[in-house]
Length: 97
Image (cartoon, helix red, strand yellow):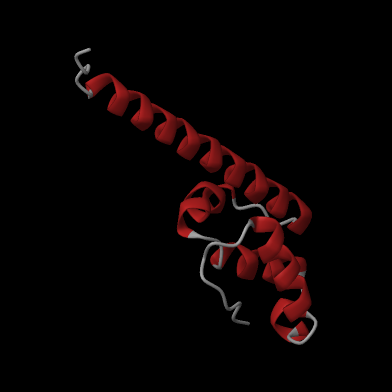
């Protein structure tokens, strides 16, 4: 089951699309284990590296963990952007009056 997209969807959007398409591919996601493996395999790389080692095979827990990882990555990116902006301001020369 392929989930088309640009890789910029949120986990919640991906989950909704996964459920929608899984109705048409029931054999591919017949068990909880198969649902988890397929969902995990198609997470964005930056989330999959955090989620895969957990080996979670209860779908609702897997999705919740992916949402938490997404929030952590978002906060990490915001902190990095904030720090980058702060460093840029600190390195700018003061203008003379």
